[in-house]
Image (cartoon, rainbow, N blue to C red):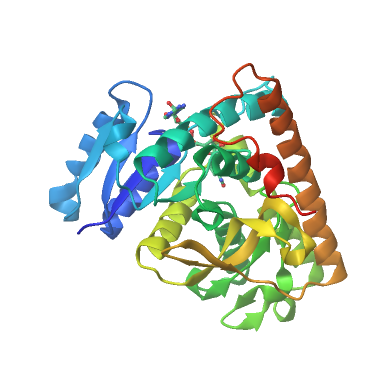
Length: 331
Ligand code: TXD
């Protein structure tokens, strides 16, 4: 039987993800959005390129979540972008409501799916999706590290004038200012970049990676990056569908790895049919570990803010089992 992947949110990221996945030909695709006609129109447009691009998969669009039933993987890109004047808390409130509702519905129709979360603020939305979907811990995975790493790889290749595919990079931590690019694990053709580039250049590239999202926002003026994010999502989806056991930096739920509990954070993980098959624990330097913990604390504070919002909401929102919020915490 052919695999099925649903993408929620037919905006820039959702639609480009559909296009990359159709090109890979790994699954039938369903695009869902709340805007009437939008997902059907985008899906039809993609299918009409099929005769030339030689698609053998079906791409359909719907406003009804029932169309996603029986998906192997569901990607959540639904949400708002932060608008001028909107505080971080406003964005958290708006997107957590959307992600909570969407993941609840998605899990209802696809109880065995792996869920890839894309909506920002990423690490917090992963937690919201986990609690609202009731899916297993390893089935909920956030996309950020693959994107941050591919950006770092591009900058390195550009600087050294080498093939991009020969670069390897690892970026850990939260998606944002607290990300932790690991230069010790970053190499070109197997050679560590510390042997190829002077300190100041590495620092400059790390800084550019950290601000990679903002750099694109500034240039685009409306909206944020979507090609590289979508390509990153497609890599993750393919690794799950093919049970590849690839090592990818993803936002995974931590249960004591790196001394961190009960938050989603960017770490290298083995990705296969079950989602996060294993979190890899690297030997980090004290400095790197400190960076990761700083990142974790920032994410935790925002998750606490969300939990307060949920407990003060009259109906608690669609979070399935509020008791679980305490249940997973270490004693
Ligand atoms: O690294 C990363 N994780 C990211 C995250 C990289 C790029 C973009 N990142 C975030 O993804 C971004 O900050 C947003 O939160 C999402 C989606 O970005 P995109 O650029 O695709 O936003 P759009 O074009 O505004 O699309 C969002 C769509 C839009 O069509 C809405 O109608 C739809 O989401 N939407 C919904 N669909 C289904 N169900 C519900 N409830 C819903 N609400 C909004």
